[in-house]
Length: 187
Image 1 (cartoon, one colour):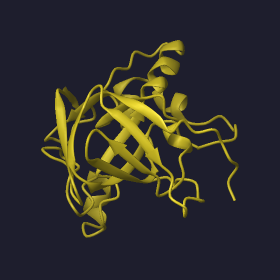
Image 2 (cartoon, rainbow, N blue to C red):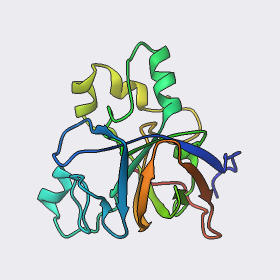
Image 3 (spheres, rainbow, N blue to C red):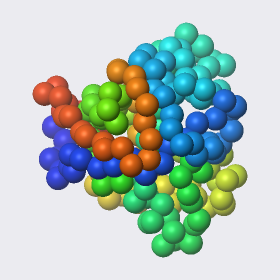
Image 4 (cartoon, helix red, strand yellow):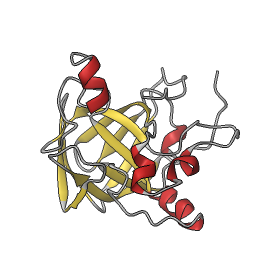
């Protein structure tokens, strides 16, 4: 059983982003719309089957467990202290949050966003080589250094269970399900 951690159960949305193309970074938007079982409307990673380019080429009928990418804005502060300049959308996330320790949330955690949207967490975002092409040395910064906790600090992935609009300033509530005992796997 994983260690228990103090988890903030409420935070806020700092920014939202989407991009129709498969680009590393996403454009910050005024609002995005989450669609149940699909993902972020008008985003390249939306759909019922895997849309990640590498995975889609090899196994195109896999269920899409990467419909939405959430990242804590606190990561940007830590990266800034290490000399990196990162802003919302830069790392390809759809939703930037504040006040939540996302990477430590258990598998199956429900994240309520805005008035009606709900995302179920499916895994940790695994940083790939593209992160170093964005800014050299960045991948090393988002890998854990043997400390306890998640192996990656580059956000979490999830599937949309209930749709609706999400915008900066929206409240984010965390609902831990009774079956939430396992740590998030790497995706």
